[in-house]
Picture 1: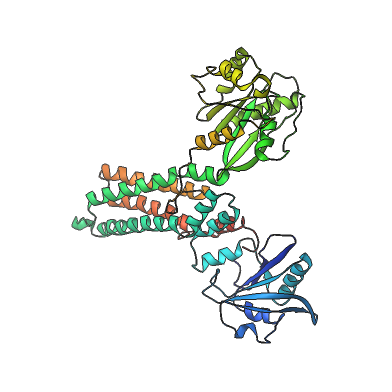
Picture 2 (picture 1 turned 45 degrees about the vertical axis):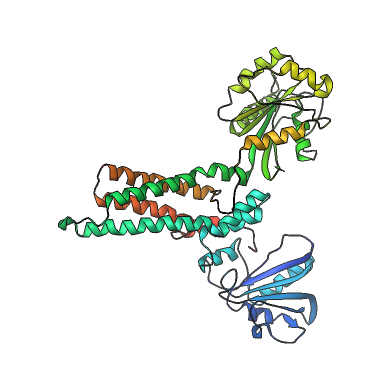
Length: 464
């Protein structure tokens, strides 16, 4: 962390808009702003109360650069815990850059990525997991991701971790006290009670760890691979779902030679669709590489849509199934029969109803060209995603750093449980309890390093 000088940055997105916001934080930022601001009331900002807004002009070289509104927040009652100024100016890039340069010339410096939030963490306004949720909230693109980020920012996750860590700390203290009186053969920590506590903590940490599969899907999108032979309609379906011409559609076989990915929101859930190269025998080296990537993406997906041209003979489909099913393990697989407009939905259903039924019971009949059956496909995707309803009080882990720390904490608390079963001495138990506490504290920032903090906040946007 650099010395606590005054930092400044444009907090609104790059580009031209109606309004832009320039933010300053640090001791003396109010007085610094006074040097470039002239209020219509002719009163200095440093003489004004906190949480007030003032109209006036930014002056540069004795000329008005822009008319602005300035909001004042005073320590410790601000986002960063320091004195904060927010300048709302017109959204011209010229105006934004000139005001920022003017503030820097008066003694401020340009803020580093995430430095405002980092100062909020260092000043005790939020813990580390809450600080990380600020970035998640900014990036939220669906109701589910917004709800998870808000829950974490309000401290639901942190409070649970602090509660678990406090219980561990109390018992660790008792066990270490026993070590001080080892010659007296005194037992301060009731082993039966400790067993119950360890079981309870292990269960809570395990639940949090297991929730990551849901949290990761909600945050990053549920990966859906669209696979099948060339000209089955994969790219047409992708364009239809995305509502844009993302992939090239052509009657020529092998048009898609690489993986194309994009996300779309369906019924409040984010799905990451992956259009792949068509599966076929080919001597084209580039197309062969694309087909190899198809199988890799198939293995990484949560849901696989196997697109089948409805006019294809059943025997050929059964032969192709061996190639596709060899790459399917835990993925949910759906047969999507396309081009029902050519042969008729009823004919297709009668002909394909029992095809591979034992291996792949899920099937949908569509015409991607005429947008028939797409709503049924979307409903099937939401159903197969099987994301539980997430309430305001639910604690779901979405951050890979938190997940790794929880896994380490779970390993440590399981060693405590095994140690109790084996009646190990208190010094071994105390060491494992301390390790579990360490990993829980790493999530909230009770235990942190400059390297960890630098890595986390470097991923934030400048101005936040």
